[in-house]
Length: 416
Length: 102
Image (cartoon, rainbow over all chains, first blue to last red; front, side):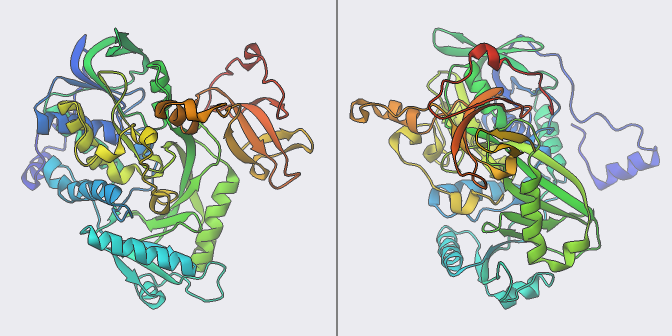
């Protein structure tokens, strides 16, 4: 890998930037690998990277049906935080946040992680009680979390209306200073480049069409570019997890839904933190380009269409305009939808499956982006050791039959 | 964004409806006899197909009545609408329509 540095940038600048090497190869798939990862989004690439980096397994392929980062990794609102209520979730997301904090340095790629803080608003007395409970739980878990009064909120975010007569009065908020946003493309490219440098084959335009089984063991995948055999297969296919699982003859507690987001025209800097509200199903931040990035809640029906209903956009926009009256005349510029894999308890499923050789990482629902590094890290450990890491042990498929669900709807049901 | 034909009110915008998820899930006759895996399968596991899905809808902002629909989850094309208790459309009539939006 050609490392990036100020000196190298200067050198390439003097030669007209004509001699940069490609960041990753485009290899033909080999006949057999130790591990095949299905899905070349951030989570899949991170899994491959940590398998190579932490566990010394380098005979790995990541197969992606489109182009890397073209799925949900490029279809989110890039928010990163770890202020989850329950211990299990808090530990998992905090691991991810800690990895984010060192990621640009580790990958030698600027992932533009900007710890500008994340604010979760409370609009009713019960919201305030829930917020206080969550902030206290976070502090007990060593996660930075504060409670803000309406006046403190207004000082941090002058644009917000804290009028007591508002339709959604702002009565308080939790604030996680270490939360923030990152660059969605950069995390994909950073992991791809670093994984490739460790010998991982990234195979794009390669859709999995079947799962190969021999006497109950998964031994590879059929793809549009031929059969690829593998000792272990990790499925990291987000909204298409059920589709791959069906090929393997496995049923999952997952339903896929469209999730929409949109950006405004670029404006001067006016919002230097992330503001989210579970109660009104909307969240907003301002990108480095000046666009307001707004996310909505999921559309209420199963869907694989990467688009959703206007009524959902309208609901999110109405809530944002109510909270930020000055934004009412800003025009929206782009809109998109992703397909999110929602689990019954709004928590991910990471672990082994009843099929030997098949590992699954899905159910991140509306909150996958923030967990990209941690998700890859724990799945890599699970695949390498053939057992879950302590961090993802509570998140295996078995929790649905044992009944040990982790209800994070309060922290994850809407907000990313 | 798509339209749904309510069996009672006719064709209306999808935003007037609320989806109740997969249809034809039958509660096991004697839950006490099931092992945990089978009970979990009934409670949580879903078909979630990429293609035609048999699902329950309620016209929440209209007549408030429930019905079933066969809808393609990729194109959002409604293959057929039928009342609760009626047989779902024959599988031959649920042939996948060409995918779009992918």
